[in-house]
Amino acid sequence: MGCNLRDLATPEHIELTDLAGQKIGIDAFLVAFQFLTTIRQRGDTGDGGPLRDSKGRVVAHLMGFLERTTTFLEKGITPVWIFDGKHPELKADVVAERRAKKEAAQLKWKEALEVGDYVEAQKWGQRSVGFTSQMVEESMEMLELLGVPAIRAAAEGEAQGAVMTNRGELDGIATQDWDALLYGSPIMIRNLMSAGSKRMGKVIRAEKIVLADLLAEHEISKEQLVDLAIMIGTDFHPGIRGIGPKTGLKLIKEHMTIEAICAAKDKEIPERLDEIRQIFLNHPTNDDFDLQLKPINMDNLRAWLENRDMSNARIERNFKRLDKAGNVRNTGQSSLFDF
Image (tube, rainbow, N blue to C red; front, side, top):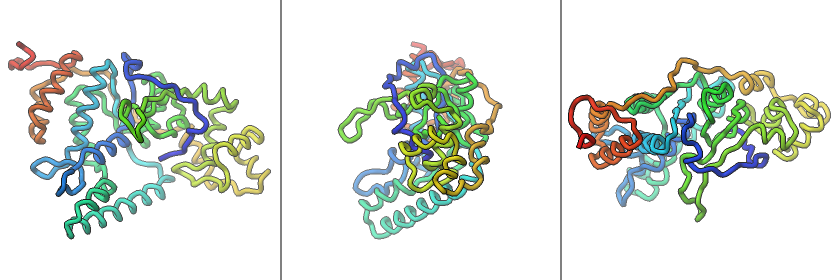
């Protein structure tokens, strides 16, 4: 999942309330996989797959997007959900490797179900999930009904958000993918979706990373940060053997560029280096979007959710929260908010 720059960053802990009044781009694909792997068929005879409705349609991602969107609106945050477009050709090997792992997990999942081993099914069901194009379309349809922006990126979702943040259209991009900094996002927010939950006994807190601070702290340029990342390894190149973040940082400060480092250390220059640089420094974007919040038509949204077996309790709970946030529009028919 991109290049790991954690060792170079000094994150600032933030609360959701710190983002009130801001437009925050969200890497929707990473979030969707979180929903699909956690909102699952559990229990002694659960198959471990994502939650489905009575027609067999996966709804785990929809439940997650509904709850999270409601929370953001409740906190005064405008979520801008950004979905991946077409991956760059240089990422083909990474995509193929991920697909192979998923297909292997799906095979083990089916084998476990055939013999009634639901413990194994739970394990492999979680690893075999995929976020299909149909799921993307359903998610964007529901988000439109919720009145929030949903964008299909030209290529990488976190890159679209990074460029939009750099242009001042967004106030930050929320993602776990450190590549957002390589794409030039001035502000990156990590752990936004899991803030407040516990992992290994510790409470997870949202973090803000400021690109300018990272560059100033290490006295490098954005272009040098991109070269450093390429040496460490990205989705577009496996990196140069023996070079990690600390060694790479020392080398880039001493020699300035990958070409100079490779010449000094007798290393081969990464193939298609300039193409990889351009992916980070000049990433394509989809500029056809509207970032304004729209009033929610409750009747249409309710019918859509009920069609996917969302419980009345879940619908009413979220509608109450949305109404409190001031995003509900009635259509003439009385509702519980009229009384």
